[in-house]
Image 1 (tube, each protein chain N blue to C red):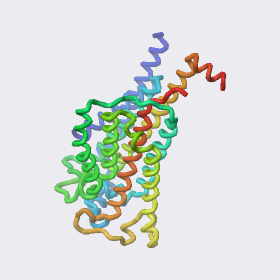
Image 2 (cartoon, each protein chain N blue to C red):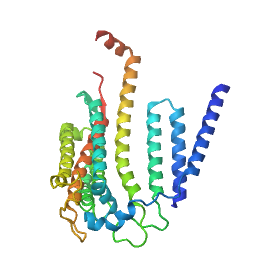
Image 3 (tube, rainbow over the protein chains, first blue to last red):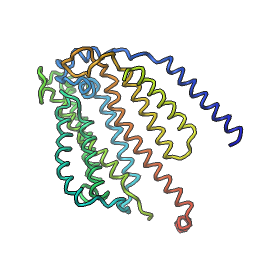
Length: 236
Length: 114
């Protein structure tokens, strides 16, 4: 390595360290509570959800989440486009028959755990994002056990893209409920739509609907990304 | 882990990621650096919401709750981060394939025929 390059490296590390030091000095000990105090005090009566994070995601800042979900849609569409060639071969063959048999015991447990997390996302830790990631993890598990072309044989990539698009559309439409009653977009509770005062399965109907939509969308999106990336493209 | 310690960890992750971004040439390593930086930012956001002795923000509260807003931000950012890293990986894989095609002789042949 020449003296010049070593000097460059030393300069770079020094610059990074001083930037890090400045950032460390500038960091506050904690973020101000701001609107969080309101969310913590009022979320049950205003949204019917006791999980305040869910209430923020799907009610107070539902618009944010809508745009965020669009990013996932764009990314999975992009990955599918890059790997859309029909000329590919499976990159793995799957595991032994024992693993294949015993996967049948794991499958219902994992799937129902994901669904449970989604349906009870407004009253306990969890939600559509987490449940969807668990379901997508199941598709990764299937690909490992049965070989990477398992999904291509059973669920077409196009089907997943369609599910994703439909769920995005559903998310958009749910926001219109409040609008139809003369309130801003995505404000369901402000429009006087029903919520429960006591936490139970249906105490926050709109958060539950959005949770289920996001669950299906995240599961379809992440597994579509995985399905595309697991293909080993053949040379044309 | 206390708020200070996780903030320091986040800062170290950010510095390592910036070092990786400025030194690495290989696309895969660049993607890894971007992913590391994402985790640093997420950890920083969540640790700023740390409250001494705070409990999870799920009602009914037994004590002071942690700040739920950074947690909600981190939750959406995790999904965005995973999808952007996937897209970057796909692009890197395609770029590598194009590079290989250009170097191998049959790739040149195909290019000439086109």
